[in-house]
Image (cartoon, rainbow, N blue to C red; front, side, top):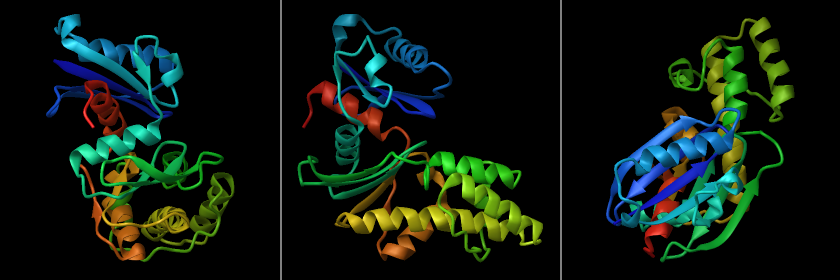
Length: 253
């Protein structure tokens, strides 16, 4: 028997096929202009070759879950991230998740249930969108910013608003501030924003970092240094919500 979890995010759509013990198949694709079309494509690919009666339940999550007509159940990403990380590491009590356009801090109990959460979805400050826009000014992208930033002292970028930060970065480059220092400054500003949000919640061991930005080892290092704690990273930090949806669909606690 299997379950399917599909997480429709603003930047990427993730899907997981789960057999109750492990991830059998996973898919990550850009969401693009139509969350409904992309989510359907991910669902169709995941169930390919599997008889319908062998799929226990399909659970949708993420900001695009409302358009998932194929889903048996729709669950918030807060709950799904909690269940996903708890399945991987049941020692985690705090999750920092940074998505394409929002960020959240979630506290869990010993059973992986949500006991508290904070969410920033009002602006793109400190999110994947912020990093995408600011790294593009450097002629780089999210995947290469680590290379640029490594070993450089971060220059101070005071504006967290994406629009104002753009102007500030252009000004710094015009003053011949080295690109590596600006790149490090961009990551440091995201780290500061993230840890500020963490401190408004409760930082309880163990702390996990999920979402696409958790792939930046420099950002992970900066956050770890600021909070003075080791950060747990799953093997694939982007599929945690989809995994949690699949875990719920299978009926696992």
